[in-house]
Length: 193
Image 1 (cartoon, rainbow, N blue to C red):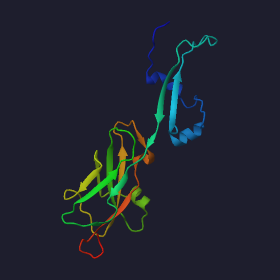
Image 2: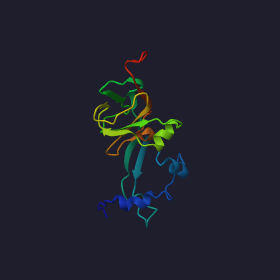
Image 3: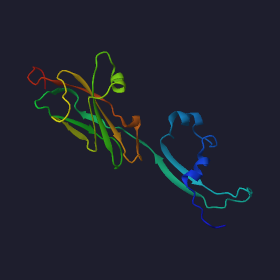
Image 4: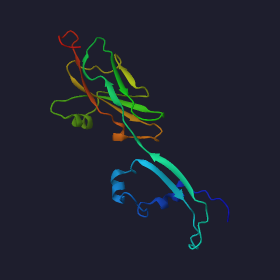
């Protein structure tokens, strides 16, 4: 008695088996479908009872921990959007605005896809390989000579995904921001800017 007992995650795992948990505010099936708890504030409390003497009060003090479950918003692409001048050599700034709250380490996956005739944006993003991809901790990327050649008058999709490399923060849409289209156009063609 009165000897502290430290339990590991492995030893506690059986108590978090979904088949024995009581769900309040959502069903077990809703939890399984979503794969996570809804956003909001939570308080998780523990008390220890003597298994053989249920009629007595808890044999431990109540211990609680509070937490906030929040999904952060993904980034918004600010450049390039629409027609871009096809300068030689190519130097195109790709930029995005972080939309998450707080300061924590982030990484961004930048992908550029070639739009193929007859395919929707979703089909291009989900079934074709990007013509360019990189990962950076910055919110800009200067596309230039060392990168794959992009063709003039070809429609491209640019997409950015934010991730927390420590896997402590989570994002809406798995971190994928809204994609944007751009096209390189002849700088000498009338009506381009």
